Amino acid sequence: MSTAILYLPSTPLNVLVSCAHAIAYNKSSKKVLWLIDQKNCADNLYVRALQEWEDSPFSQVTVLCGNKKGLAKLKQRKQNFKWLNNRLANLQPKTVFTGSDRRIEFQYVMHCLKDLNPLGGYLDDGLYSYTGRRQVWYKDLFSSWLKKLSYGYWWEEPVTVGASSKIQQLHLFQPEAALSILKKNKQVIALNNKLFLNNKIFNLSSSVLKLFAEDINSYALIDVLIFIPHPNNVAKMNGYLLRLQTIISKLKNNANTIAIKYHPRVSENDPLELQKLGVSKIIPAGIASEFVLPVLPANCAVFGDVGTALLTCHWLRPDLNLTAILSKEDYFQQSFGPIMRQMGIKVISLVEEIEV
Image (cartoon, rainbow, N blue to C red; front, side):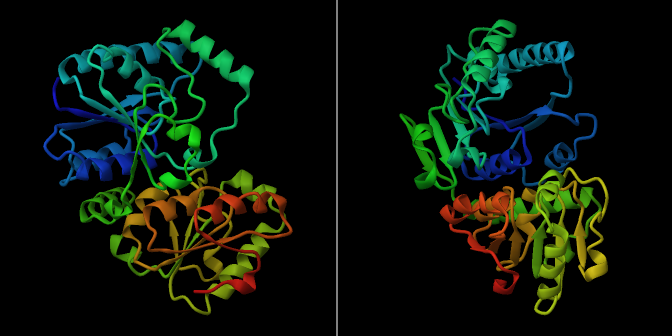
């Protein structure tokens, strides 16, 4: 068997973890990265950044589309299977890493390589490793049956991400906090978060920011970063904008540069008009937060509320000063308190408790 190692990421977090992992892992092996299940294939900025990355540990970076629906999706996946099968015949990797063993491309790769018996590795995809995914047994049963019928009986429906029999090795941010069902009968390895402070990762993030026409030097000046959640979550929180305005007003007294990062689903530059309140920088919403974190200065104060942004900060940049502001008056906000506290993130409920 060759010593090749194959990475199959699908999300920006998967990509960043794959890159950091590949830099440090088994340096003598050939490594390739196939970015799977992508909605944007014609001009994927992350693929461009990876292909232009001078420090890349990968000998090849390729993108596979996953942007069709209905019967067209079935046809597209079978075309992808054909492509995968042809490439695997030459590559024959000894190890396959993924951010989700629920991705059909990963399971198909492991099926194609079954005679070679490669190691299947799960690179932490974040929240699901610690809270699991909501299961509806009949939906899972139907999904499993449908996929087996459509693609083959090699399909396996894992109880949670990373828990399938195709995964033998787990690389986790916080192994001690991960679900026991995930770790059962698997080798567990802690991801070293210092990997994300590597100069090579900084250079990759810089490349991504440049593709968005961002001045990399401006990020070193950020004192405070505030994450705005998904617009649907904003709508669930009564008085969110007024509360946010109060937070910004208080922070302005102690911070020179306040930056705002809207959720990627936001299409406008500054829909809440926060620059009028004295916010210094609006980070383009389209930039995945994972590629913003490596270029932030140490001890930068980061504030958030609902969602996973602060959790990602905690795992990738534990040297940042993180605070979740969760109102006691809002049940939806309070529902995020337990996981924040479990991960060691400071949780406050009043604006008056803010410290910078």
